[in-house]
Amino acid sequence: MKKFVLSSLLLFLAIGLHAGHDDLSCFTIVVGKKASTDGSVLLAHNEDDSGRLLVNIHKVPARSFLRNEAFALRNGLLLPQPGAAPGLLWLEIPGCEFADSYISELGVAVASDACPSREDRGELSDGGIGFSLRRLIAERATSAREGVRIAGDLIARLGYSASGRTYIIADAHEGWLLHAVKGKRWIAARVPDNEAAVIANRYTITRIDLSDRDRFLGSPDIIEYAVRRGWYDPRRDGEFEFARAYSDPGAYADMRNVLRQWRGTHLLAAKPPKLESPLPFSFRTRHNLRPHDLFKVLRDHYEGSKHDLSDRYRNGSPNSGKNRTICTESTQYAFVAHLRSWPDADIAHVVWIAPRRPDSNAFSPWYPSMAATPSGSSREKADSAWKNHFAPLPAQAFEDPTLAFTTYARLSEAVDRQYRGRIEKVQKIWRNFEEFLFEDLKDHEKEFSYLLQRDRSLARRIIDNYIHGLDYRKWFLAAELLNEMK
Image (cartoon, rainbow, N blue to C red; front, side, top):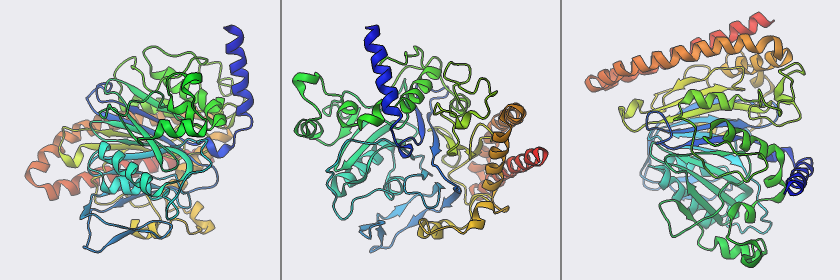
């Protein structure tokens, strides 16, 4: 047995050395409502994309559509619009096809992780769908389950254009993982209410039962197709496991993916798994979780473990070490969506956002119901940003001092240059700031609930001013820290 484990780990490492960097992007956690402290669903996400990038945070207003209006896919195909769409909080990275996240005013949150498949013959109609899929989910779904069905229908009709991806779709009641495979096949599984799930650039759904529609949705021929392609043989392989059958073998075994999934599970699980053991789709947590607990995981570099190759930062920044960490050099933004079912609709859902790397920046709260995002959150309005998403950005956009992201990006870079000497002070300031925010928001939400019952229009202006003020304070603190480092 020991020889088998050792040979398996060596194989993982060997494959990992040849895996492409493009496949090593993003990290996500979903927490079911009975595994959180307050009965909410939590969705935590690090968005990882390499290169010199910009992050915009937009508010897309709620809209009603005319009878003949259509949604234009990137390939030019027109899809009929529904009668109306809710407002959206949109985290955008211009120029990137698969980097955006959405949280709607209805509390439907959508993020994604690249998960390469082994499919090399995927059927596409009209060029397939990719970039627009998450926007369509966010605009059209009134629940996470409906979002899964919308995504599945579009994939089955048009075909998914990329190799493979996991779409994480959550609301205040359920969290789902949808594995899209290049072409017209997909599978989705619901995270059990009393468990959490971790995703790190490889498929995680194993055994499936499409007759159990409470837990699984997907292509009806998902097993038969794997048999036809030779990816699954019932006599040889035993019970069907989607991840083993459909994953790109290199990405599935890559230790840079395995290690991050293991680490996230290890930090949260009641019974932490061994690295050499099969990792679970979902697991019971050691205690009920709060957003703070997920902040810690999104900031992790294997601190305190043998996998931390920075030697407590003596070897420099852990963001660019040999071991691919959860928080890493290419992390462009992080968020934790706190999706609640009981407060007033205008303040039911809170999204805690940390621009650029969360290890050196703070999470602060945003309501998807806001009429507008704070000044400095984006370089253009949401409508023009959608039209110009793939247009090249001017060089000055990446150093624009009027954009908050510029300050946060510079702060992360400054910390990295002298990580050991700077990170402790920075994290202490941000820890105190976040603790203040949690208590202050809790107190203000009681006031907001009272005001919303009496004068909703006035209350919404007060709420927006409060959230904007918190974000300006964070921006100011980041600028002060940056000036001290200069």
